[in-house]
Image 1 (cartoon, rainbow, N blue to C red):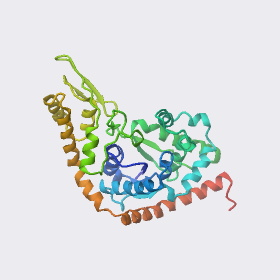
Image 2 (cartoon, rainbow, N blue to C red):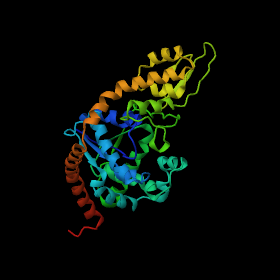
Image 3 (cartoon, rainbow, N blue to C red):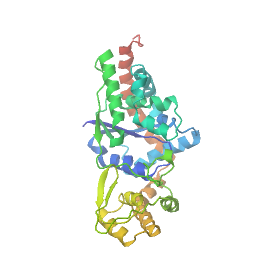
Image 4 (cartoon, helix red, strand yellow):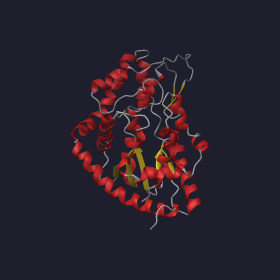
Length: 334
């Protein structure tokens, strides 16, 4: 089987965007590959400066994947910071690429534009991600369309190293998840902890309801008989219908219920956003409640055991790869 690697930052409370963008896609496909699942805790330091919250978030990410159906015996689940080789290799890559090259990062420019601190870690983020991917001779990296550039950075780092020191790294291929869309947040932007526009995944039903009730609504009026296009979820057209509805609310709702049913529902409840939000709350609960029960049953001790076993498996790979890298760049005297 081909080797696949993916990861998730423990930078905040898990939300439905994480579920549809990361947890569910991995749970649905990971057994088709030799799969590695990384808790990207060092990446989260670009934005999270709360040690207690970070520790809690690390546990939550692992519990989340397990609750979503991932079997830790069939995937290597590990913590990025347990593999010192990641940051070591990132430094070597940083010595091979240029500042103008890193300045091309869409993610960096977008986050700075949204008000995030332009710290050096955020700027160098692509090379740490390249190290994450390349250390394992990863062949497949599942990403959404908005994340494809991350894989291109990894391919470029591999190519630069291979040209300078000889064939060492496999150039990975992006697996574009066409069915995985950019999940909109409560304000219409991409759902993100950074934007504070999330709907929590494993919180209580009341907390989920509070977030849903805060979804911004925007009634779109159309002429009688006109065709209205609603482009949502990663640019895919999900509806062509003469209808007035709250675009953002509808976009989120399509994640949980059949589109045709929703068209009828939204036509029958024009401008009654409170009723539509209550239906969405109920639909979210149908999907999330069974996972929440499983999530609540997983102890921190079980999470630590999963990460310890995963670290042992990952370490065997990263230590061998870095021994080769050190020899090729000249820092090893053996």
